[in-house]
Length: 427
Ligand code: LLP
Image (cartoon, rainbow, N blue to C red; front, side):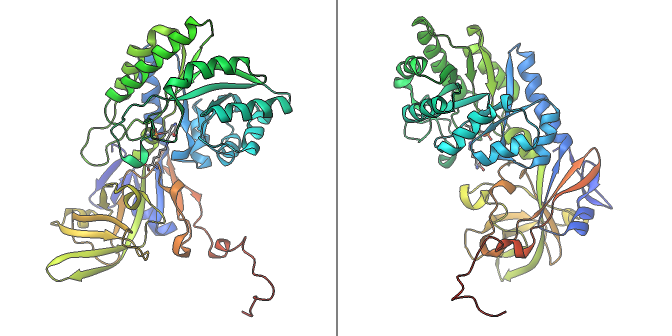
């Protein structure tokens, strides 16, 4: 984390800004993310593709971090977006990402979402089933549009990642079975309102080895060659996202190795290529700040350190048993001798646990911590469970910090609720 440094006086700094100063001003819980880090990591992805002499366009997977400020900074650098809902489409457009730089993925797009995509002129729709192809053809005809599509193929390759985030196995709900791909592509070419331009694949997330990518791309290359042999043009191959980061000690996925896999398996086919990274560029850029409400001693057993942030803010540890680094903000805390502790949130669920048996300095009431690598699948997966408002968000750009989301006002939690008049009581 080159953007994070411990300063003996100011404590943990991000891009030179003391995180304690941000917590003092906006309170905790609070997400903080480094714009410079996002730019640098996206730049490294882009450079890796260029160095491999690949014609690759990069569509950021909006699901990883859909904040308008993040999308806007990516738009300014010329990146496109990979979206999975009408909401993400609206966000991407609001951030100024042109419709033709947007790719629409997803296993179940509603008619309304597809119609909106056609209306605004989304550049590419990745179709995930024979059924969706027919629906899209009918909708495109109804509106007098042509949908530029790829078929998302499930290559039946094991990405060797967590079961809840693997997508490229035949048993997963995603994509078109490999065996059906060629015939369906030929069928698509006949359908009114449909212009097939190529294929897409995405085998999973937090992938740390390049081998499953190579296996998937090798299968796609075979498919593309056989489809071309039938006389059908294939110009685009969307290689998906999934490159993993280092949450603990595992070496992070290398963009250069991914570029090498794409080059080796698909480089000879003269394709326009695309990737859809989400986690890799933004994950390490962000932290979640929390404060210790109390330290609950348990005699000989490891104590519970109860934070003011919880699973409603950061769901990953509860949902995937994900490991996130936890670092004290104060240099004094950080330098104290460590002991085992369980770090938990105040939500009424045993699963509301950030870390079990973690070696940490003795965190006391009022100590603050940064939970690391929360720039991806962090704030986007928050809920208001236990009527806990969505946390504040801060962006640090070039050494200056900006509040990019206010802590949610309590009243907005029930703003869209109504109570039938016969039940309405007096307040
Ligand atoms: N493209 C498609 C079609 C996807 O489904 C995904 C992620 C991506 C791209 C971006 O993948 P990435 O580069 O971020 O790995 N919430 C989970 C991760 C779910 C990923 C879903 N699909 C987590 O927190 O680990």
